[in-house]
Structures are given as structure tokens and as C-alpha cells.
Length: 121
Image (cartoon, rainbow, N blue to C red):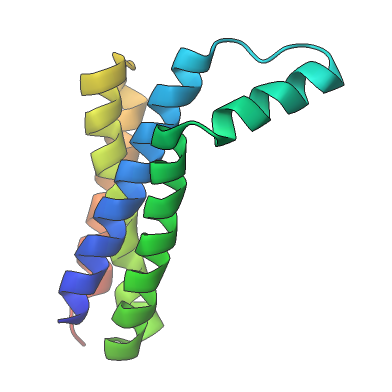
């Protein structure tokens, strides 16, 4: 059950990041003035999609607490790095972000590290 809670933590985290990226991108450029920045943030924070992204982060933290109730931190935490892989894939798919050799290598090293950390013994 602990691994299910980790998976839900990662999925809600990734959803939140994707929605925030999407909506901040639609909001336009951040103004140069302090008052403009404050207005930009307040307008962004009242956006229902942004609220859902922030709520998703909160839900992810609840699942994380459940995961930690079932698994040691040193076992659970490395799996959260799977979000790097998902963000790389979804960033390229939904936002046309470049997938460079460096990003692929870095993500492969992270995933490989997860595999090593998950070995028993």
C-alpha cells in the first residue's frame, strides 16, 4: 500500500506542476513593476486551474504522509524522483520543451539511481 501512496504522491505532484506551467504560460509575462507583479500573482492565484494545481500539491502531501506511515523515508523518498521522468516527457509533449541529450542522460541517471536505491540488501 505504501508504494501506491508514493505513486499517488508523484501523480498529484506532476499534475500540479503541469497545470501551473500551463496557466502561468497563459498569463503572459510578469510585469516589471512591484505593483504589476503583485497584480499578476493575485490574478494567477485566483485562477481555478491554478487553485487546482496548488490543491493537487496539498493532496500529494497527504498521500506522502500516508506513504511515510507505511515505509521508511530512505525507501520511499527515492521514488519521488520518478517525477523528473514524467515532467521531462509531459513537458516535451504538452509544452514543446526541448528534450536534449543532457536531459535524457540526467533523467536516465536519476532513474538508474532509483533502481540502485530500491535494491534490497
